[in-house]
Image (cartoon, rainbow, N blue to C red):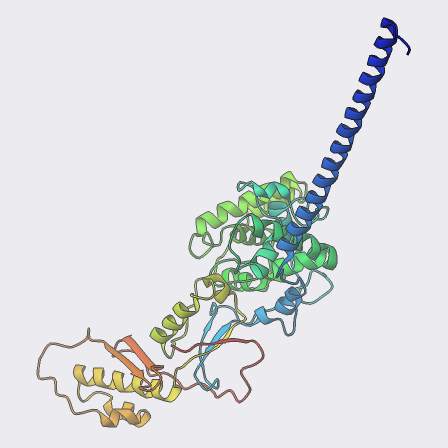
Length: 421
């Protein structure tokens, strides 16, 4: 039996201690490695789940050409309401000053082209680095910052039904980058300028030029283009509703362009001195069933936001019976005319309105003219409850509705919703 000396015992203790330390270090390293691997897996899974959540039911950027590109672009047509047969047009939601919605091209060699000044002004005000950007900006999470041109287009056309929030913001940026990469900055800018809201039911540069200046967009001068650019940023401050504000904000756009070197001092001074002539608003033609149209628009508002309805592209088949509506309208007017003057124009109205023959004779023995009376009529289908005719607040001085030409064609592939009220 060997007797260990003190040095031997110390050496054995040190070896054991070192062995324990190495074991602990190895276990700690293994634990760290396992933890890092676990965190990497969790991170990968989280990123994958986040990506799947953001891209779930994501709209396709391929929808935008079908909405805006001529000749079959859905939004090139105003929202139109028809009677129950789809043959008679009741009303169109559009500014009466707009002759037709025309798509303008960025190519200056084309007959219908976007004016260079409007293009430059829009980029200067909305996104000065447009040609270099990726289509989105993370800085716009700050509410004080503006969305990029591409983001605005994507938000207006692809995300108008989605609730605002962080998820929508991220999805918008994802599609904005995809849209600009896939179609290029020229095409995206062209779409934006043909889709932007300029107030007064004017969507797109061509419509805005017709409404506010009574001319094609291609003929806009620098001062006029600056005004339209400002209006696109605040549609309510347009030349019809706020002419002085429109002029002042147009001058601010010119200052911005001058500061960015897009125009010369001489061009800016000439624009400041331009005598801007704004168009007066054009009155809308009489509607066949104004009360009914308001009711239908309110009903649509439960499914679409108002701007989407006004932007266009919807063809709505209503429950209105055109013949019943026409007869109810003229019969109501005949009755009001008789109350005012039993002998005036009764025969002329009866010749156009068979329903008036069913009215009883009414004599107004009072010397007081009955000029403030109105008529309200609602005709319902008793089986379904559908509204077949509706008249509200019709005065006896109004003219009889003119029967529109019958549209023998089909309502079309753009029909979005059949409304039953």
